[in-house]
Amino acid sequence: MKRILFGALVLISLPTIAQTAEGWSLFAKTKFEAKYNEKAREYFLYPNFPADLKALVGKEVTLEGYHLPIDVEGDAYIILSKYPFSQCFFCGGAGPESISEVYFKEKQAKFEPDQYIRIKGKLKLNDADIEHGNFIIQEAVLIK
Image (cartoon, rainbow, N blue to C red; front, side):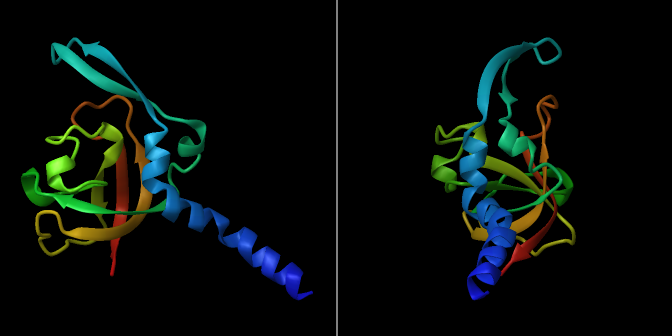
């Protein structure tokens, strides 16, 4: 009986464990293709999200990473990176799968550059709007 109960508890907790352990690695499965954007008159990387990542849309995911000191008007969101600023997508050569926009439920105190934080929130994927990142966490809360 104890084995059955333990097995049931493990199965129930697997989605949460997977989301925590694999946040960035699931993003890394995304393939990108350079396409010309007529409006911007330049090439952008457009994502082709894998099915297992699409299955998490609207579900709670957890990410740990570094706050990037990107000047965002109105402080509506922050950028969370798998890597510190010197190695990030914008300046260090990492790919677009290594950053996420994070929109918090409640206003947060200012984060320091490269401050390592852990958040959880609902996943949204973006494959068309060049004004935003491909990976967006909405209704986020800071995990202390």
